[in-house]
Image (cartoon, rainbow, N blue to C red):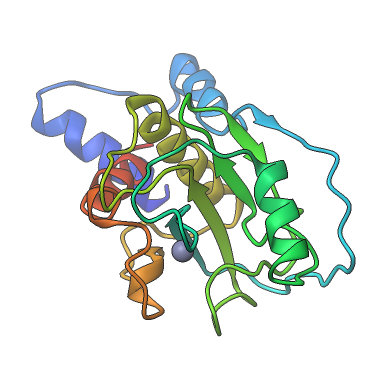
Length: 198
Ligand SMILES: [Zn+2]
C-alpha cells in the first residue's frame, strides 16, 4: 500500500468509515483517479528537441510579459509559442502546459522534452503556466480545478511525492521573479493538498 492509499484509509478510519482495500468500487475509483485530464494538443513546430532525463518537480507560473504588468489577460499556447520563438529565440513555448482562464489545458512543449521556464532548473522539471497576471488578478475557479487535476496526474505519472518539500513549487522559489504572482502563490498549498488526497 502506498502512502497515498494509506492516508486515505487512515482518514476513513478517523471518520469511523470502513473501507475494504480489495473492494471493487475502490479499484474502479483508483482507475478513474489515474485518468489523464483532457489536454488539448496544438500543432506547434519546435526548432529543436532535447529529451528530459528525469522529472523531479513541478513549477507553477503565470503569464506576465514586459508591457503587460498592468493587465490580467487570457493567452493561448500558440501566442506564447510565437513570442518565445520570435522574441526569446527559444525552440518554442517554454512551458509544458498552459491553462486558459476557462480552465482549458493546452499542451505546450512536448511533455518529455526539456522546457524553458525556470533558469537552471529545466533539466528535471515540468512547467505549468496559468494565463493571467496574479499580482493583480486571481486565478479563476476553472483554472484552479484544472491545475489541481493536472498536477495530481503529473505526480502520479512521474511518481512524485506531493508531501516532499520542493515537489510543487512556484517559479519565485527558484528564480528572482514575482511569478506566479502573489494570488496564485498563496494557493499552492491548495494544489499540494489536492495532490495528496487524489
Ligand atoms: Zn514563471
